[in-house]
Length: 334
Length: 298
Image 1 (cartoon, rainbow over the protein chains, first blue to last red):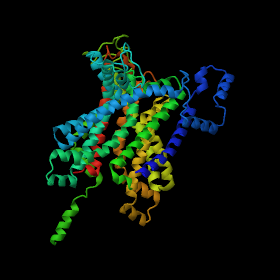
Image 2: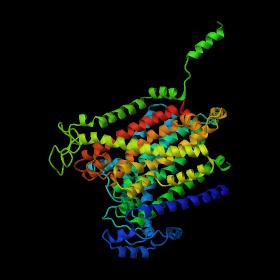
Image 3: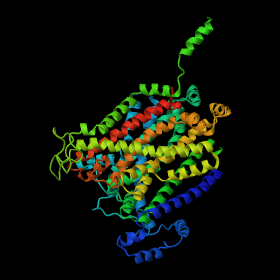
Image 4: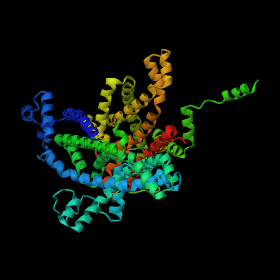
């Protein structure tokens, strides 16, 4: 097991190097450049050159890359042109908002998706099975921002049950030691604030979690169908085990293997979905932060954001592979 | 004539059922495929005959400028927008753009991805290693984020947007075709063709590709659905086609998202146009997958 993890970690190195080269080249290729972003379109040639010298942009390209990579390893993503604050500092502020939203979304998707897929497979080609198949196809056909807008219209505009924007009511004061508002509310021991945070979280999380829910339900169903026809299930039945025990110990446990992978694969989808969901609900997370960076040509933020997103996807996939090897010993010995 | 001969002649009459005729038979029996095909046909008709079907032009003002434009009525079934344009007409014309984006971007991604996947799978070795590592790298950046990045880099022309969305699908097609070719490369029929001296390129295009293409076709259908969603998403973020007159659904929806409270029809009609067109491709792709995937056969 340890050897497997070590091997996977080593394979991560070339991926991260390639990624940093790719993003570096991308940001260099963007029109404008930091000097123009700082000084505006009508800057003089001399002042542009002065800024370039100051930022080291007059050096040969590979020297620039090495310096950038060196900074990256030390966790230095540069500073935002707009706010003049270090990118890492802003990231640490924004990131908990997106993680809180993403976790809530995936929690919703898993809690609803796995039972739904499992029951659908058990009632193969029954009414519930067919209905959930059709519903999941319709579910993945909704653009996440449109679903978010519909929910906002129904539950915030028409019914007024839920708040439509932000993470917390602006009149409420709450200390933010962690920036995970749920945790912050617990730390402060403020029950009303906790309820308020949950109310703000509910719609964005359901909107963001709907597509993963549809996918998880479908995969669970397919995997359960596979396992249902296995010999060991028949054996378990033949030796007189109760249905509940077979369901739990023989079927569900084995059919969850592919589901774990799929949950991991949703990370990328969740992150990009978060950009759209955060826009609809004015959620102060990484998504809206990067979008602002694009609109304001804040390249340091954009660069840091993309590297960070991709890094996250790579690491989560690694964790999924490792957990997969842990759950299924057959993988390790290949 | 002996009994054996009589049976043999009867047997010969029956056509051997190949992968494609089998698949076609299964698709025809699937009601989901019919619904998907019907929906798609509806949108194609809207796109092709837009000037005939649409009551007004996409830019034509039939009402007056209004902060709160009138909603659906008998005269204008989908209502008017803030510039007094007929929403129904704009949505019918918009079908052209969405279908165009779906087809062109997938064509770009498919052709690039297939070339890379075929090279990778057929030659193997170091070439395969380099191509696949690069594909892995691209896959580590979430597709929609990659599209956002490329549009920022290339600009917001319609072609640039289709190109950007197409590029995000390249690694998917490349990996799929590579895997499929690898599975076919060592098959007996390929060995047989090779042993009678079939040249390499012919071996690839005539023997291996037709037998590896099925999963790629399924993926292409589903990718069109994603492409339509992605262009709508880009538009929603303000990164859609920069031509202000284009009646693109996502752009239409995005421009009116702030009017949700008073003029919900300006958000809902274009939104559902996106949903139904995406659903058409998803239904078709799903039916094709069920028809072609040997694992799902009863």
